Length: 142
Image (cartoon, rainbow, N blue to C red; front, side, top):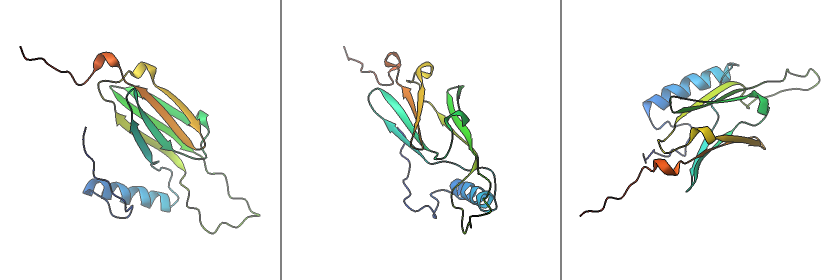
């Protein structure tokens, strides 16, 4: 398992790459851009990996989930409803537009049995582990 530095402050990027990504993504979003990157929680238990993608306001028909060359890609679009003339908008902080997140799957997963559900703005993708492809083996010395 690879350790990734946890950054509690969204305004201070952990790496130069994330600084560049944050600059371009924030600039596009602030200027009415049409893409964003949803937040994702990754959970591992004994039987599966779970991705919890925070995408409120998206219809479940607007998601595309694909596995190609051992890479899982979750993409879709959150549509912005047109501004209503009778309401005044002082700030629009919610993100809208297209999004895409990709994840390299570990070798011990069964991509044929991946399933997804969408409840209360969270897309939950369950990636079951394949017991036949265990990553850890114990070798007995004779």
